[in-house]
Image 1 (cartoon, one colour):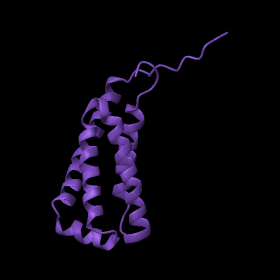
Image 2 (cartoon, rainbow, N blue to C red):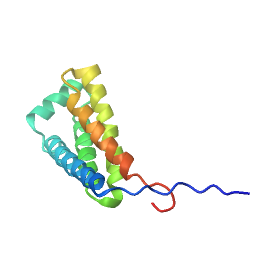
Image 3 (cartoon, rainbow, N blue to C red):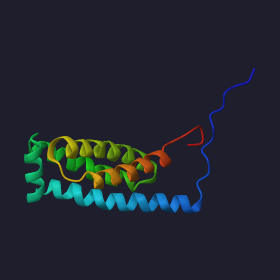
Length: 129
């Protein structure tokens, strides 16, 4: 009788690791800026969330999720959580652009791809995770 052994986490090359860290840092900076502007009440963000129509509480929630996710991206043990959280936020941002406010969804799509990549590559896998 054979037992099932989960696949061990494949080794990440130095270049893959450096690329992931670059993604994490750049995404964290973008989300700190975007989330911070929401939290401090930048005029453009207040107007944007008025246009969305869910109230200013949603601006604060989105800002907290973005800043919190950015911080999680910079901590090695939680980078995968930050990537998953921010990728989810970007799915909502893409929907908002397409269905509610118009404008280009491409920046949100790029951030979705970057944070999704971080989540996928940094997620815990197998017993050696």
